[in-house]
View (cartoon, rainbow, N blue to C red):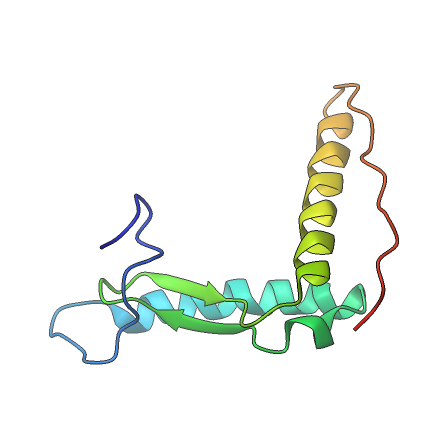
Length: 106
């Protein structure tokens, strides 16, 4: 079973010839590294200790966040919304910034 992006496909445990697993994992590693760098800057790295690059059976890179507290997931969602709102304002659209509610740290 998989969704339209292949994210819920099983992770690759047994490798098949001709599937570009290394390429997919490398893309996932870059994505996980970029996210990890930003989480460190925000002081949230300990909330996402299970962040890891992986690859599915189709060779698509995937990033697993690991087990995350609900508060950390909510904060990450709010940060994404705030970033998107900021990008929208930067492109001349008058979108109000979503206020971030203070959440307890881990």
